[in-house]
Amino acid sequence: MYNLLNQVLDNVNEGIVILNKEFAVVYWNSYMERAAGIKKERAENQNIYELLPGLSRLCIDRCMEGVLKNGRPMFFSAAMHKRLFETEENYNFKISRLDSEIPQILLEFVNITAQIMQIDQLRGAIGQLRKLNEELKEKEKIIKNMAYHDDLTGAASRTLFYKRGNELLEKAKEQNGSLGLFFIDLDSFKQVNDVYGHIIGDWLLVQVAGVLKDAVRPQDLVVRYGGDEFLILLPDVRSQDEYGEIMDRILAQQDRPFEYQDIKISISLSIGAAVYPDDADTLDKLMAKADEKMYVKKCRKK
Amino acid sequence: MYYDIITELFNISVGKAAGILSEIVNRKIILDVPEIKLILKEEDAVDLDACISDKISGALMVSSISFENNLKGKANLIFPTEKMKKFIHLCMNEEVAGKDDFFSISEEEMDFTPIDFDVIMEIGNIVLNCIMGEIGNFLKVNFNYSLPDVKIFDRQTFYNDSENDGYSHVLVLHITFVIDEIEIEGAIIVDLTLSSIQILLEKIKELEAEFHV
Image 1 (cartoon, each protein chain N blue to C red):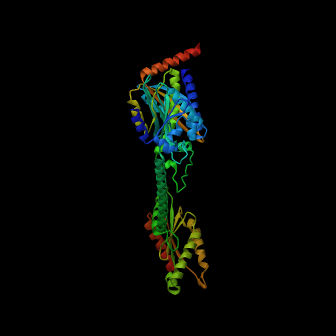
Image 2: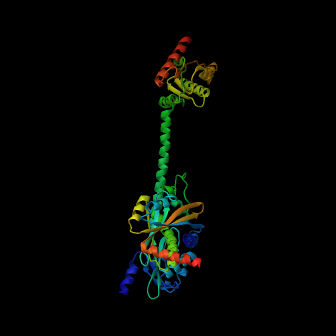
């Protein structure tokens, strides 16, 4: 029977050590020979702390004494007790008391290196996934920006105009506020394209967008509605007294010709303004009203 | 008066646990038992919830041991899970990745791993051993039990389990863990049978009488 038990202990997949009450080795299984690189013959009768210096800590010694005294097993995790043996492997270990005429101590060592590696791999994979997710979010932002802004001039797109315009109108209605809208058209733009070509035409649109952006307040939104038509959303603007100054700043830029290499191009802008609540109560109606006023001004110029 | 006596008693025992833990993790760990309550389950069912949720919120990480001979009961060391990741990593002496680091994930974002459970099992083992050892010394009995089981519970499941296990009394010890800048409020809940609690109360009365002599 003793021989059979010995074989069992030599075949279990964990390190088994039995110590006497002076902590000298009385049994050392085959697994321990491989794990610690110490043969049974050398281990027997040796003090455990001399054989495994990794265990030689005051706290472990105190726990070992405690187990011997009160018989309550103690568990030690590989995570908090690294390098028990002179290898890179990680072991959980347990100290228990074996009750016989003279109590002895049982040490069990379980290798959890593979588990730690799997967790590290998993952590790496999650990290990679997170990185990809961040990149995706970044791309989503770029796509959104593309939808919300005009590629050529960098001004807001129609999509953003309707989104922001409706939000502002809603807010104005709720809070008894107001919203102004400019409809701006670049006079005789077709001729610029015909005479100087589309490259210069496009360049001029970029300049005009720049003029508009420079003239407005930080809270206003400059929109390229299409072709040579621009819109400006003016939150909290109620009357001509309030938007007149902005309009003057824009029109003042007409006096200065734009220079493209040695070509000088003068521009003329027609601006129509409409205001919620006086002129209309929807964004489309507000736009129609501003367009109408712009058209009147344009006709007067002819 | 006897609450003061046993509070002092438990503070001595968690002090011992703190000493062992500090040496294991190479950091200063402070453990303190600021308050103790004895609750009769049938009468004070609501009280247990109030008593714990006052200090501990969210899901619970519980290490439990059951003991049978001499006294029958069950002891649970309870931590709120929310701060446990950082706590475990401080115990492991490992750097915790920051949230802005794209290449490694912060520990708070990962579920508890088997390695985390091992760390809590070791801490639970040491703390519960010291507490139960002290109760054992006090009552002059030796408790025998195996290593703690570590589980995560949502609060209600834990209470339901605790209500249906046949124990009549609960001894609740609030316990504070301080490691580096982290402070964690936990609790130790010792479920005891009526006969066990009677033995405990008698011993406390004897001790109280000795003080008055």
